Length: 284
Image (cartoon, rainbow, N blue to C red; front, side):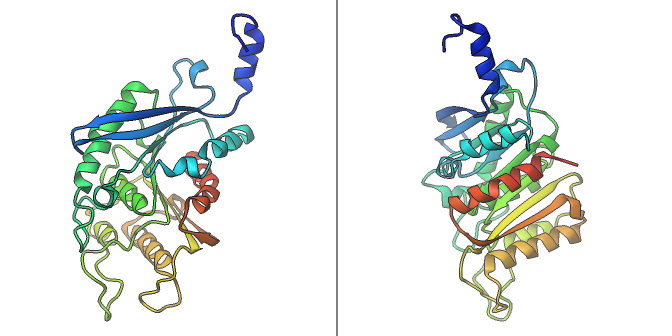
């Protein structure tokens, strides 16, 4: 429909649309990573008609998985149902160096995977976020800024959120690679040396107003290193939640979503996505 031919009808049609506007950014230069980065931006349907309104931000690692789970369709349905406020989502694509760029910035794992996690953190905090803040109308308060990821990308998002409470107020971890460890499994203590757990345990203080959402599927994996009848991904997640509680995180700032039959794949994460967005965006 042409706006100049039928301006009233065109404006009405635009106001009725609930699908996000997708912008694809390719070859964004990063000095920190010494490479170009691709990412997708999902703008809310009213973005271009809302004047100076600012929006919450949900940033994703492994943004290449969002189209696989039909993320635009998920947003369209949630916006139509009015179960989440309008927000801006950004999905950062992983590169071939994913296993080295994701991880924990404090240290690599026992195979030296995640060695570039400090550089990836620098990219997020000092390059990508300033660009997004300059280019788009994003709310400034960290409580309106959420960082999430899938598997190893979830570990990365958790690590960056915890280390930078002045930037991100909430983290979302889908099937997180929370087994990440600095040594091989010790038979006498198979749950020892998990890096993210140790980071939280030895932090000097609790970051008030931060919130954490975790998802696991009962079919995420089959490994059970400590033989307690619970798969490692669930064990690692529940243990991390215990560390957060011990550090002082209140129950209302924690959410654990266990999916019966859920697998380690985008389809499952897409099914969990509405719960994640509703919980993180509708703050009490």
